[in-house]
Length: 113
Image 1 (tube, one colour):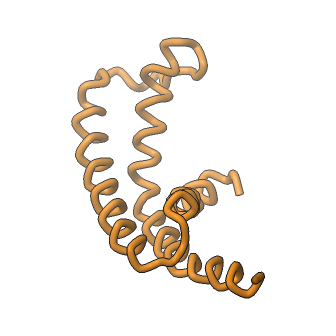
Image 2 (cartoon, rainbow, N blue to C red):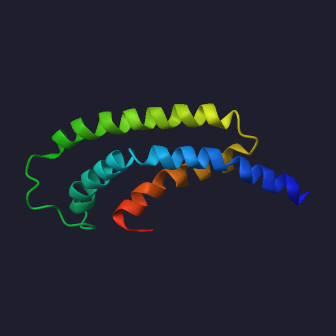
């Protein structure tokens, strides 16, 4: 019985690797989301401090963040929907591993890992 479990875990290596590679260009949208949140809503409630040079307003950032994040989310979702049909594991475990794997390059870039 444990052999089957290890084979299922091993089958997640390809989707995890693909999501780590998708996370490399994903650094840009993740940073843009953090920058928008830290200078907008989180600064308004006092959780972060707004950048003193940020005086253009938030509409400009929304115009930049929404298309970049939308394109990345579309590509990420389509690739993972295609891979999930070919991976013999549970869907909840698959999406959890993929969501964590796509964040690895960003966490490495900002020094969390």
